[in-house]
Length: 214
Image (cartoon, rainbow, N blue to C red; front, side, top):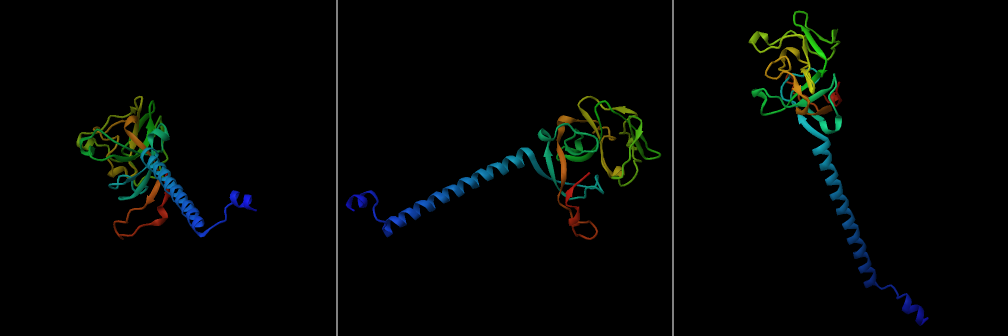
């Protein structure tokens, strides 16, 4: 009996308290460690993979509205832009130096763009585009202000031709100071709307707009 007592001391309230404190301390350490790991992972995702950006203006209406908050997949992850993608980019035009702009990719390197501004139709490699996402046909050429391109134009290597969905209220590749956008200036591809902007007339948000865009 004495030998057993020496090998297995009787549990006392003091020993039990110390054991509980030790377990609680270990559990707290595990919780804090997991929180740090989670915070680091979330930071990496939102810095290098997915970013939040807001829309300023109506150049992408009706697809995107002013003050929409968007999820943007980083260009390092999404790969080269493709026709139809909605992308956020920086451009050399002086009036856009402060903030990136968001537009739709119409053509990529090697493709030829032509626009019939009288009919409002955009052609890529001789084929008229079916563009249900636009607000109006493409009538504005920027030749009206002496800043338009001469068509047809072929997109250079490593560049893209972009247009806003609100064709007559958008400064984009038709505007010579912007022109063809270098793919290296693309920040990422828009995945969807996280928070819809308030309607300018009603001041209300259309929550059904949350989700992917195309």
